[in-house]
Length: 162
Image (cartoon, rainbow, N blue to C red; front, side, top):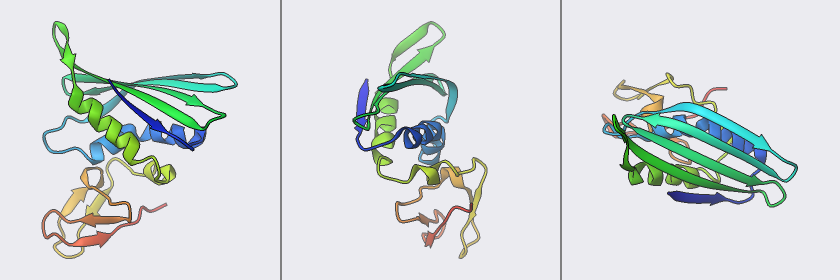
């Protein structure tokens, strides 16, 4: 199990982050990583606490993320559990998946989550120099909005369209 804590977050931003997990995972996956697909999301709340659990599939594995959000403190605590599955059941922990999801959570703690939620799964990027085309979900967009073309290496400023 991996854990991550985000401070100074509100419920709306937290919900956008939770909805963005598959997009963030798939945008930053290598060619050898399995695609992350949302399977189930359940949540509940009290006056002081919002809690959620999200299940995802990825190749031969399962990723489960538990979230406890304390409204008064503005703090969200994430527990990430990754499992490798076989026909017999759970074969073991998937530490790579747990660490990758923890890194995604912590890596996007300060970013405007509203931007992340607008990434369309089939949106395309075309390099203005060499005209190479990529699915945007496979590209890495830097925090200052640049994309590096994998074909010619040019750094291109990119903005998501509203």
